[in-house]
Length: 406
Image (tube, rainbow, N blue to C red; front, top):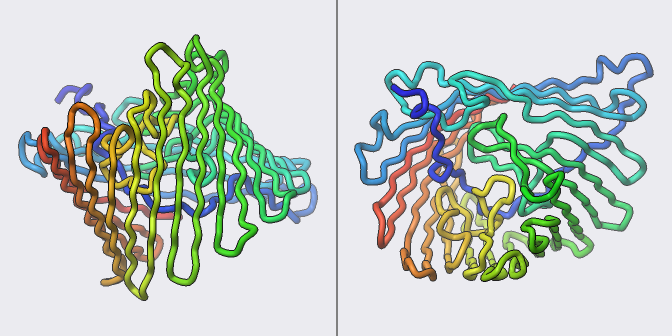
């Protein structure tokens, strides 16, 4: 089997569900160590995970489980964090190793993710320093970014390991019930090859993108988030700006959420148009059951609504396992979801109906059926996806993975 075939990664067919409203993840941990001076070596916290991941995709060619349609990888990720290395300065490092473990011989034809472009390799996916002063904390270096505070440059969790960014973050909580975040982001690695880094903003000298986010929880049950990005000199003609807002309200067993914004691209080049998007979601939980309905609409602007770091996922509530390519531009989408806790885990079903407003008029549907469970320190997922399209082949996907945390 040719090595180039084995190392090919088709990112558009390997997407994990991501349409839920994310909780607020901590961006920078600032808790100071209470260990006496001279004992900093004992402050290191070591942890990691081991992952086995398999997926097969059939889109009109061959059978679902045959070798030509299957991809897999096994990985081990090790991390070490010290919140007070010296003088209040913390540090963290993460090493991610990936291997085909010989599956290319009989079972699969590609790696879902690799570290170096080889069958076995490792990459440093995080390496950062932290510092806290009062209610302000700083994190500088290679790190993950959360979607809840950075909706257009975030770490995606659908593959074996998450992608990361080279960035500087400043987080302040001086204002009551308010978190202010500034991010200076330069590069992102590829979700398919972890050691392959590229500038988010190719035309800027440092590849820089600036982000400002404000998040407020002053009203009980209500979280308001506003974000502004600017990528200086995104094209020779102009900067690229993104304005995005999100409002989430929870009361009792019910939730309502609204999102929307625009990518200001009209002046980037002749013929370019701004992109505007809007989304809404209503959900409820009834004991062992939960359900929701989500809607999104994106116009025919020139820049799609997606992660600027990877070009894959979207921040839209209608994001499912495989539909990002059909919902990020010029469409209207409705997604129905239902979940049930049973058999020691949770069953989830989601159904997408997307109207393609472009000249292609390729309307589509997607059905996702997923079962997740946790056995001790092991998280397991088994999922099936069926995509139907008016003007293209149906797509069948089976994905299975296990993740052991230690």
